[in-house]
Length: 163
Image (cartoon, rainbow, N blue to C red; front, side):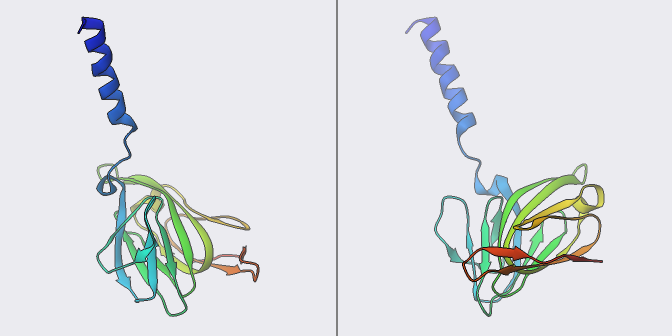
């Protein structure tokens, strides 16, 4: 093999490693701290599964609760997100640097009632909750968000109540 061929092969191998998806551990946003049995999660590119206490939750994971389900998620920055019955969210973005105690978080709320208690991220940056009616931001506090699911399956956001 020529030097150019060897260099090209090395470059392709190095670049292919960059395009590989990050491991779930690298994407860890937090854990399921409390779970009522009627709750499920769906990590990206995986099937829906029963959510269990202590299970990692990651970026782009869908969390749903049924009629009797409830979940409390504890994030790496110390924030918590509690979902009531008949809720559905997706953790769109979660980035946190423990050295600088900064990061960002964006969650899509499709339906349900949830309570967010801010952690280190929300002390310096607003945390965003996308709803069908708009974006709700919480900075350094507590937010309660309710999104009603319309009969056709689409959701309608209620005004958020923040403390």
